[in-house]
Image 1 (spheres, rainbow, N blue to C red):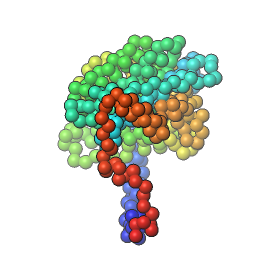
Image 2 (image 1 turned 60 degrees about the horizontal axis):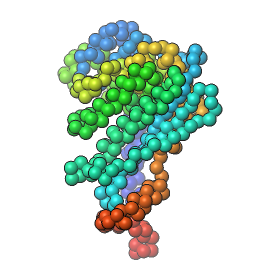
Image 3 (image 1 turned 30 degrees about the vertical axis):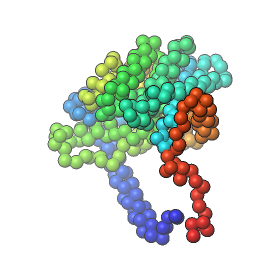
Image 4 (image 1 turned 90 degrees about the horizontal axis):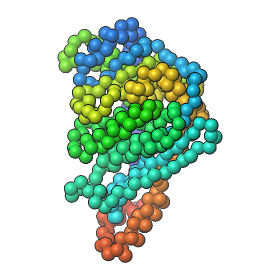
Length: 387
């Protein structure tokens, strides 16, 4: 049945009025947050002391002035570039045969070569891997498995190239699935962290690229600085409706980055990452080529964060990659990795047919799809048929 657009119109008008009111609140809070950042950045040590008392995830200023934008300069070195992205098929209880797949796209940009080298690596789950006791594994399980596979291939292909090498993944670099404590999650996080430690041992410039970030870790820091009561006694937040992106969209001009911050995690997350021997850092970067800002978050480990020349190399390389994509900047290498990794519907159907063709001759009894799924698969009725 079609939507009742006539009765929805009043709700649409109310939505628009609410959006305008919310926008004005964001503008006012962003202005006050920028004033607070400018004020408190004169005493970085005091900001750090305040941040270290909280149990929240918070941005911890490193050595650079948090209120000062930083521009890239021409790097003194060249680098190899390797990027990964993944896609997945999650088992559906309504469709037989049950199926889970991870598909990883790896793209290499070797120094001195004009052509890229896309590679695909696929993992089809064994039948017994599809179940957690009696239940099919969840999307969360497949996602964390994909994260580990992405890091595994970043490590594999980074270590066969000459240095320096930038190894880039889409999304956060730090892997935390709070408050996950199940044995399976802990095992995967340990595997992921072990791979990161190996990248550290080989001095690979690894980074996570977060498009449209929603983090509030700097906002949380500014709220702590502007209210001197203990966090547990705070009755309200000073900047409840804004994110870090709002601040840096006003502060950073085209191609500028923010200062580097440590991504200080809550105690329970530090415990889950106990096999890591380093902290994580991040900076924000305005990758826009125009006056309209587009701010992204770049996550890096400590061995990258402490080397200004390497940070500049990463900064410069990301701007080059984003410029290739024109008016909607996004690293070209990650775009190509995504293109390489994506599993299309016709490929999924072909894989199902391939699995089915081996199950029947092997004597496996074929289950039917759920009747709910069968109803969904029916062609939608036309208006005349509905009458």
